[in-house]
Length: 432
Image 1: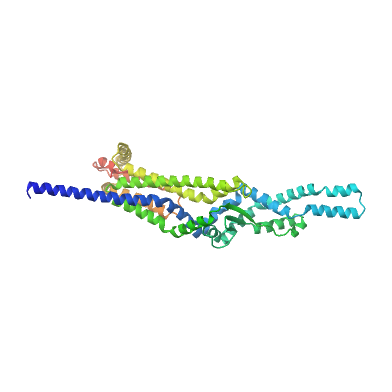
Image 2: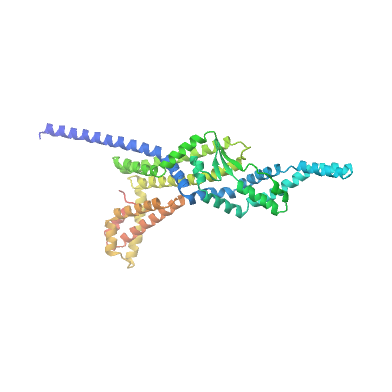
């Protein structure tokens, strides 16, 4: 080619390269945007799916409700009031007064009998309250609560999808707790305590409102959709993130951007849950539930969702930090240099004391990138296979991975080969 033709060829090649890079940036940007938008929904969908499909997980979710002191106090007060309200103390004292009057008792005695309504009501209220409190706070009640929820796991389906029937039921604009078994137990306890009249207590309203909202139907529609997507939406988010990183011209930068974006969305989800909590508390009348009871129920029911959000946030922070440490930044280079110096010094010290790794160490030094990648991939796989990992589990896996990398670096440096003294600086966190 002539000089002019070569210049034209180079110009066209560079133009094609720029166009190709722009397409890759555009594709990566779209994929990252979808990843960020779907990440919070994936966390919520996975939580809903676990509550519906995993009985043990559901029982773990609702079990603390029975042992919350605020819930126990509210149940005791409500059940006591409903039982006492169905005992007509005034009619009883009036009947006693009429009987005394027919028997010719002095007027003072008759009037005294009529004035017993207040004291008897107070005494009955105190006695019933003590019995109910003992029932509600007993280990048997907590066990019965767990057993009932385990046997009627359809409760969570009722709450989240509006289908099925169980102790926890969804009304038109509320979520109610059916306490029929508890009330029957209270009646029997009163009879056992010597209050034979308790057998004559008529059936009372056996439900207590836990949540009240005029948007329950809309919320259930959203929950039904999330339940369907609970399995596949997290997988879709991972695939989109992987495609975004693969299609981006700078993979490390794309990985760091993905981690930062997902972390920001997890923070947004936590903020959204806090706002939702306040909206819920403001919407619940004190006549339905005291504020502290409503807050405890909300926090207990959503605690696993918050834990999952925090776990994903921790993973995102660790991933972003790891992507930075693989880069050319001054801080990243200092960390890599310090880590390799430490493992190298330890390995050479072992070699001087006769603990040489020989060919194995040389192989580890020559394949440091592969062994490092395998160790990191193993940690990621452990988190994927772990059943409901927490932030503590993530920290544990991270420590194990770092420990493995340190050991591999020491073994590579202990090969006894002089050349590995300089090769050590590719260990633990290679510059990539």
